[in-house]
Length: 404
Image (cartoon, rainbow, N blue to C red):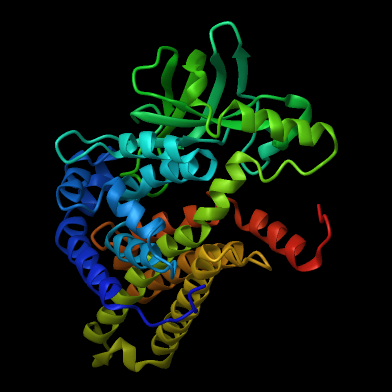
C-alpha cells in the first residue's frame, strides 16, 4: 500500500504544468464564447484529443496506473481552473468510462472504454445514463427497464433518462436499468448501448444556469435491443447477485452508486478548480483596483475575505487528495469521498460569490468571468449526489445507523 503524501512526484508536477498550459492557452480564451453559444465545443475537445488530454490512455494512466490516487484530481483541478463548461465537455466521457470500469469484466473494459473516446482522427463521446426525471438522488425509483429475450440472447431497454452529460450525442451510452423491480436498487444492472443502435434518441436538451458548454439532455430508449454481451459484468454474475438478494444476502453496491462513489473526489477537484480560479482572479483585481486613493486589498474587509478564501481552498484540496488516496487504497471509513465532494461544492459556491462581491458591480456583468464561475459553481452542490445526499451518506457512515 502506498503511503499518503501531499508531495507530488516529478511526473505529477509535469502533468500539472502541462494541463495548466492547455487550460490557460486554449480554454480560458474560448470559455466565454462557448458559454454564450451553449453548444458542445467540439473544436476544443478535438484540440485536447490531439495532444492526448482527451483519450482513454490518459484516463487509464490517471485512474489505473497511479498508486497515489492524486494524478487525476491534480489534472482535473487545472482543467476546471480553465473553465468548468469546457472542462466538463472534456471530462464528461470519463463518467461513462468509470461506469464500464465499475461494473464490466476486464474484456468489456478493454473493448468499450476506447470506443467511448475514439482517437484524434475520429473523436467519440461517452455518456453515463443513470438519473431520471423523478429519480435523481432516489436511485431506487428508477423506472427504465431491461428485459431479457432468452431466445435471441438480447436485452430490451425502455425508458427515459434525464440530465445526461453527452446524452443523445454520445457514441457509447452506458445505461443503468431495472432488471428486477421488486429488489429496488439491488435489482439494477448496467448496459452498453453502441452507436447507431435503433430506438435510442435524444429528448429535450436542457438550457442550464451554468456549465453551458457541456451538453446535457434526455436520453429516450424505445425498445432498444442490445446483445447479451452488452450486459456489464455478464449474465452469470448478474444471476448470482440476484440469487443472493433473493436469499436475503448482500447484493453488493448497485451500479449507479458504484460509479458515483468512485468519482466523488474527482468531482470535488472540479469544484476546487472553479473556486481557485475565482480566488486568484479576485486577488489580482483587489491588488490593482483602487478606491479612496489605495488598492482595495488594503481594506481589511477585502483582505480578510481573500484570506478566508485562500484558507478554505487549501483545506478543501487536502480533503480531496486524502479522499482520492483512500479511495485508491479502498480505505474509505467515514464516507471521506462524500465529505470531500460536499466541502468542495460548498467552497466553490461561496468563493465565487465572494469574488463577485470583491469586484462589485463589474463582477455582476459578463465582461468579467467571475459571474460565469458563480453560475458554474452551483452544479457541484447538486449533481452526483446533492449536498443533502452527501450529508445522509456521511451520517450513516459515522453512526453505523440507517438514518433516513
